[in-house]
Length: 203
Image (cartoon, rainbow, N blue to C red; front, side, top):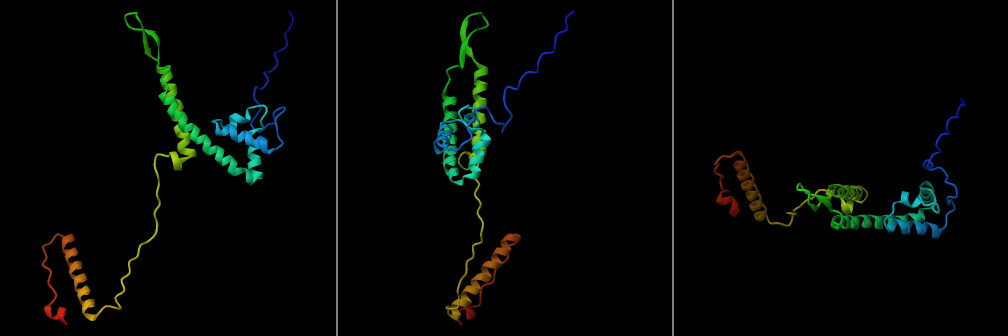
């Protein structure tokens, strides 16, 4: 009986992240970077663009962004366009009911259109995935809550140096009356607040 040699191990179908792909572009050109940003603006992720054999690796593009700060504004605009694309994609998926009904049989064996639950669930997953990404990557625009942080202190100062002695006394008396009335209300008592003697007010 002839012995058979073991089968060779199956080759890897995809190179590890960051490994150089045969023929991958690694030299920067403005036209190449613009083409990458254009594809991102039309709805592709950077990972998807970089799967193209004619495009550089994702790690190469990230290195360009790190080494060339002047590219970051262009890339940021492309990312903003990608968020807009995903937002409009949600509406398109939600409005498309083409495959929500498929031919089937009812309990009597008649051919009817029945709900396609698998398609509905798949569309719901696609929508939820885009909503989650938008809420995390563009929380200020698409987040569920708008957080407003208000800090600081408001101070109100009244200058009484220019008031007459009579006006100073009148304001002091009003302040004392309001303070006693507020205390009586908080404690729940029916306290009678004495008025300022007439002689003091007319002094």
